[in-house]
Length: 498
Image (cartoon, rainbow, N blue to C red; front, side):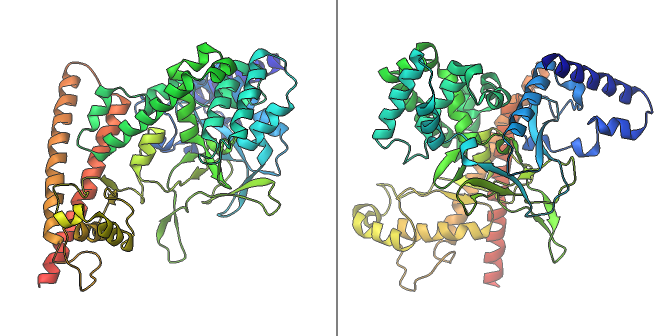
């Protein structure tokens, strides 16, 4: 089987060279998945792309080394062996041949089911408990894993976090302890490696790299994200039962822990209140695909949704855009870019859900005495306006996103609201305008410093890293959102005065 597989791979490479160097008939090249227009995709939408993908587009099978091609063929065979109720897609290397995507094996129109997979074929809390209880392995690690998972089960573990802690433990065991013996091995081999995740995930950024986001609210989100992971690791790596189940070499490895942490946060798909790692479905890349609606207006594909069928047995996913055979399938996860950046390490060029985090507005001790000291009445007023905290977060993209800011500012500044005003108004507009102008000034200073630094490094022969490029793009995007909101606010006020 392996010899035949290597022969097929070698045959593909020979055909690739023949197609590139001759005017051979188109059908021969297309039959062997050579370079076509449909292979040209927005690589920024691919998970964990190589840093040089925007400079070098080596498409076709020649860009894939034997080990990756073998792993992909084994994964395809693994998927076929599942005999899925519905499967109209297959995995394929996209772009530089180093990261995977999913392409259609049939022509499909919007809302066609393209994948239906039994719950038992996904990694989640239920399948983990079932598989571990059924295993007959007598190894020391397996015995301790059973005991540890049973402890989690009896304590109700997994109910509050969708199974995160249990899945983290199990993922580390299957990838680094069980390895080839794991029934999930064909899947675990094709998802990003520790090194790939380490190069792209902000969870691995050190303090110097995180400082690149100085001035943006995203920096604090990233710091908090890392701190949460560090606290979990501190408990994880000092738990005696965990050390027995995984062995100290795995349980004490910070990089492997962060790898599993990032994999769960970036690849989990939710239904019925629990997270799932879904072979094949979690290879679908994220992008907004625009098609004409009934009014001939270009609109993005609907937000991704996977639901359980009426029998409660299979997770069903419908396609959100029209595809032909060989087209890459995309999902729109409907998140702003700072979420994609934090948990996936990429940004979308076109993202109708994008906005700029604004965490500067909060009720502090030096605010109006009534707002801070009369906490009970303030909390009541906040609740009446849909706020649950003295420190809410806002996401700004236009004038409409400023209405909630205005509602909060009236409470923060103890502004009487006997007329029950909602949204922007003459009592708060000047305050909001001033805050936006100060925010924009801060971004201008940050971007200027980052630009000077990158220019200096270029002169010294050092190119910006993928992470730096992504963070600088994020800063520019955020500034543009704040600028748009200010421009529209000024325009609105100008019209109102007229």
